[in-house]
Length: 209
Ligand SMILES: Cc1cc2nc3c(=O)[nH]c(=O)nc-3n(C[C@H](O)[C@H](O)[C@H](O)COP(=O)(O)O)c2cc1C
Image 1 (tube, rainbow, N blue to C red):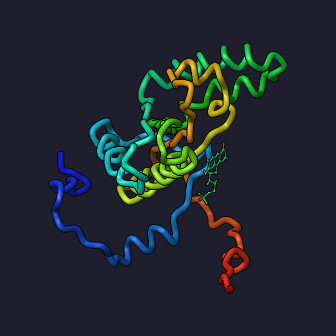
Image 2: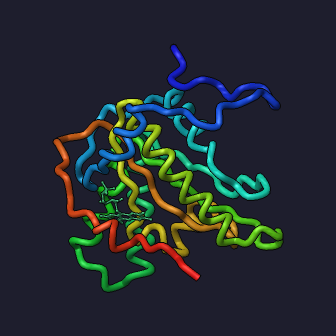
């Protein structure tokens, strides 16, 4: 099995500070998520996924805390999660409609691979939790880009399962941990279309004293 990405060089290796790349520019400028129902098998196999996750951890990380971790759902684990999630939803939301429960029953089987990205900050550390959480957000985006660059489509979803004490418990999150998102990976079912984009000019100001 050939490696998709170059391995991390030994500590202290002189590194290029820039890597001009038309392909990387295209990837960033033209990237698109697929919709929540836009994925099908196949997805990355376990060793490919491990490579994607490894390269995704190459993010800015103030004071090298690595304040994040992954929980991978593949194969039967996805259906098992779905069933437990339905039970939790019934308990936490007694008035959940049949449609909501049916949606939940299909959540993780919408894709061949689902990665829960868990923000795992150290609140006692002098690096603010906010900075640690931002590093986790960068990790999610890195994972999507690494997947796209390797031929896998993906999307970053949260939904109620990212904000549920019962799910946190099921997944073994500690008190300070939160779900940053579930990254769904697989093969695109259809062609996403360009969506409305914000007017970037309206977001750019130049500060003057
Ligand atoms: C933290 C986070 C959570 C998200 N959760 C959802 C979600 O639960 N449902 C959804 O439809 N889109 C969600 N999105 C948006 C999609 O991931 C995606 O960005 C959006 O469909 C726009 O597509 P694009 O990434 O190609 O611009 C979320 C995005 C982020 C950053």
